[in-house]
Amino acid sequence: MKQIIHARIVLRDRIIRDGSIVFSDKIISVSENSEKLKGVTVINADGATVIPGLIDLHIHGYLGADASDGDVKGIETMADGIARNGVTAFLPTTMTLSYAELEKAFNAVRRAKANGTPGGAEILGVHAEGPFINPEKCGAQPKEYAVSPDADFIINNADIVKMVTIAPEMDADFANIRRIKNETDTIVSIGHTNADYALAMASFDAGISHVSHLFNAMTAMNHRAPGVVGAALGSDKVSCELICDTFHISPPLFSIVHKLKGERFNLITDCMRAGGLPDGIYDLGGQVVYVNGIRCLLADGVIAGSVLKLNHAVRNAAANGLSLCEAVNAASLYPATVLGLQNERGSIEVGKRADIVVCDSELEVKSVFREGKQIVS
Image (cartoon, rainbow, N blue to C red; front, side, top):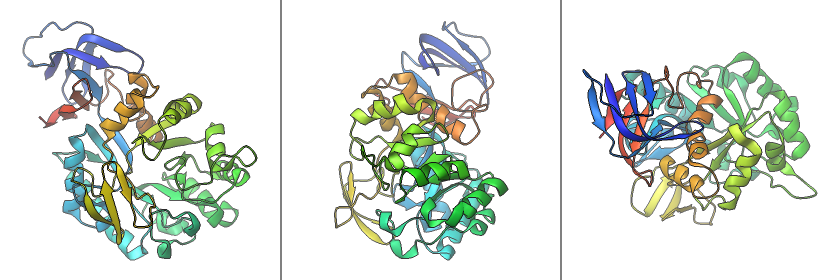
């Protein structure tokens, strides 16, 4: 059993300024005083900020590895690397590739998940961002592999695919969306889509419950044509992802979207393999990506993912209109809720998993505990 004392603890709705947390694999108590207990390992946070483990719903790669490579060691490299950014669980995210390449990637994630990634973030499953996207809105994804939605492909891999991004206009009468919704626990997300407002709203009724990287690779909101963005912001049936790196999305929109979506507002990274590495030239699905600071671009200037760290996304959100509690919730509790895991993780509460991150005032990570075991020090 362990006790963190003299901590600034970020709860879901308030901050304890000088408190303590007692935990084993689960959180045993959260207190507003820091009196040392006997018979426990005491960790003096010395005023550091303590937040719940972060959950990334949408991350392609890190430290040179990519979920689409189909390499078990690469997935484990990602898991170990992002743990140092405070991430304790994630969905390795594949992109639009051939079925054979996707099957290889899914199998690699299966094996890495079975291995347990004991020194890194936990693998919760795959986010398949494609191949069921509109080639007109492919963004940095290779359009030659974009195909119409195929429910059987997802159903056959539903043990590992926890989320799939689909352009609903590619699915006649939403037949495949309905089958995925009714026959699996896989979350269907709208993205890389040319749908208009009416079609997007109809797809929400058919089973879409999430929006992949809001604003990016979808029809914009206009005063005469609200588009997918307008549908996403106006509907209480869908949660939304936002890439808060200050490049993909203008910072004033962070708080605007949060005010509209509330508990359905989720921070993601959409990070590619260059994350955690120096500026330079990298590969994304066979395409050359030029990385310079927070900018990741194809040769034609199309944005190609990010190198964002999830703890920095929280910091950016908190610096642009969100309270620290809400910024943290958007990268922990709310993603857990999307996945139906909110009762076991996502916030610092008695009885929940001891997924705990100790960080400084700038949210740079000092140590990480996953189910009470220290994985970053």
